[in-house]
Amino acid sequence: MQNRMAAAAKKLLHQRRSILNFSQINRSSSTSGFTHHCGHVPLKQFLASYRWDLWRSCLIHMQNMSAVHHRKFGSVASTIVQRNPMFSTINDDDLIYFEKILGMKRVIQDHEELKTANTDWMHKYKGSSKLMLQPENTAELSQILEYCNSRRLAVVPQGGNTGLVGGSVPVYDEIIINTRRMNSIISFDKVSGVLVCEAGCILENLISFLDKEGFIMPLDLGAKGSCQIGGNISTNAGGLRLVRYGSLHGTVLGLEVVLANGSVIEMLGTLRKDNTGYDLKHLFIGSEGSLGIVTKVSILTPPKLSSVNIAFLACQDYISCQKLLFQAKRKLGEILSAFEFLDAQAMNLVLHHLDSVRNPLPSSIYNFYILIETTGSNESNDKEKLEAFLLHAMESGLVSDGALAQDFSQASSFWHIREGIPEALMKAGAVYKYDLSLPVEKMYDLVEDMRIRLGGAANVVGYGHLGDGNLHLNVSAPQYDDAILAQIEPFVYEWTSRHRGSISAEHGLGLMKAEKIYYSKSSETVQLMASIKKLLDPNGIMNPYKVIPSSLVS
Image (tube, rainbow, N blue to C red; front, top):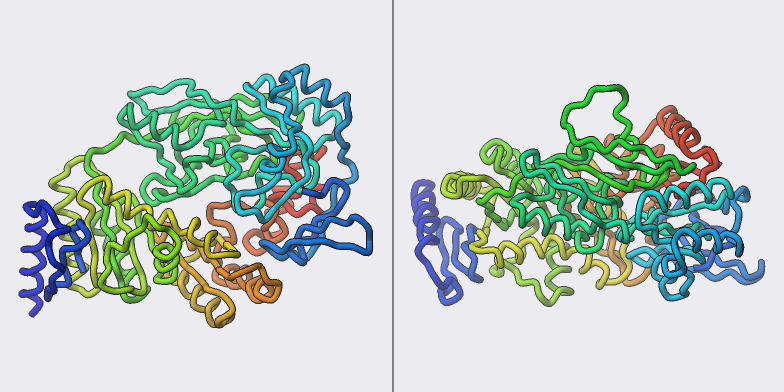
């Protein structure tokens, strides 16, 4: 029987090279589980003088002590973060100074523009800033920060504002410093593959620029059309291809950063090797603008390889997903560039809420789906290697069904399923999002435990970057509910800590998790972080209330 299955599978893999119009072919059964369908080749504001109450997870606008208005959102914390009384408020002299530097057009006081800039992408966090500044270069930003530091005016750096933990919006009335006008590509070396650009460059624009040069960005995110490279670096964004290219701590070669006092720290090296003392750039990668503002970056970009293959596979259980990852690392090795997973609940959400999505495997709803991408330089060898891997996975029962993308359109449609999950969750209603790093074998246990804990009160969804142990745990409900939140937190953090995971894999800590840092870091480590913060930003004006517990830095 096994030989017959292997023979049938090999025959069908061979047939995909000669079939021209798959949509006209009727779906047929096969003992191997490989079928033809779908044109794919399958294989089976308001807070200037108020307080932010994180215990009830809501914005509280205290017009008077007898009337409290709030909107429920995000995350519970055991403390109330109050506005730092040491911070000044903006006056007319401040506006005159900023207009002298930037001109009136880049000193934004328009209500509608500020409404957008004060609110995060998920509409969970809302500040009450009355001013947004848009510097065009490092010199302008340096003057702004030097002045703000002398006046103790708190600031929040903002790029594309696509963050998920309240890190890029004000908590109170902090001045928003938006880097969108700092968006020039400074240089690109085709020999070394080193790109030097300003922090306000949109990630997708960098991807397009490099594509024309025959290179790619080592970072790819679902929010690439809006997010900026400075924000990516400040949050140490992970993304879809970390399994192949590693984190930004490895690919960023140099930075230019402006500190709170206006000092410009020029570390914009383009060398892969430089052992001359402390490698200070790493302090700013992932610091979320709490130590300084990134203004320029040099980053190592890989060459664009000619052979890209995408497979969308179905598995019946999580054990099979784990084994498939193990086999992919062994058998695909150097060409493996992405290994993503989503569960049936995630797939159902995408199919139900995104009109443009079609199920590549329509015969059944499976428990788990895997998206594998390979990238190499030899098309025939890469395809052969991938097909041999898939054949073995089918024969061993790890894969129940699957589809191979035959062109760019089909590959994009596969990726759209995975990248469309956050949008589908937003359309479904309220969502509690948790970005966690866990041992691969334990990742889905948390999803299942959360389902048991919540019962039918909410829809628990699991997906993420299986290749690097990053779970995106999402709890979807019709509306935000304190009862649901109380069941999620602190349980989710305690569970993660107990299994030696991280409460933030790639989204950062922001406001949402600043008080939760002890679940992943020792008190000694956090104290050292606070000491570094006080050294570089003694007045605490840089993105206050974020990353580090306020009690340590106020």
